[in-house]
Figure: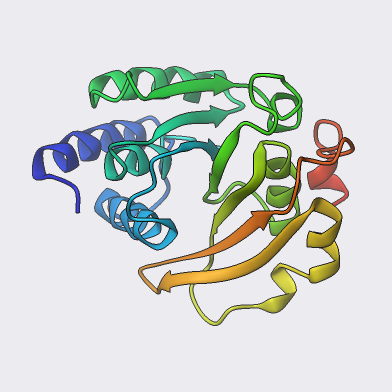
Length: 210
């Protein structure tokens, strides 16, 4: 549970992001609640290094950092305008000592020596279709690392995460956790990322593996 002052600071940042057109419809409190639920479902006491894939306005990355006081995080986004907002936001909510912003395409940064196979957890909320998200995330994970993807409400759809496609990427799962307030599919990396993943910029989205 976020402390009231922390929640107030995060709410102010998301309200600012909404004015800039970076946050979708619905009360910003609902975005906070959902991200808090994801943090609890993934691991209430996570203390490693994580990547927020397609961070946007910092949902869920900023909230994950606030929920996990011993964790460090990298907030990744491809758009310079959003990266600038994130850089300002981590300072505004006093998270700059545990957070950094990586600006660029996931397909390229996943091959950067600083980031490849460097994260115990990759979190994604609204990054893309399951196959696109899984392929872009796989290159960032250490062996045994986890990919946590926010799931849509309703019954679990087994076609979202087919065994054959996950095998290609070296991922096991998913284990679906949480409740309607915040459901998350957790997949686990079985080894170092395969050299072929991810493919070039835009390819995972244009030609998804499933």
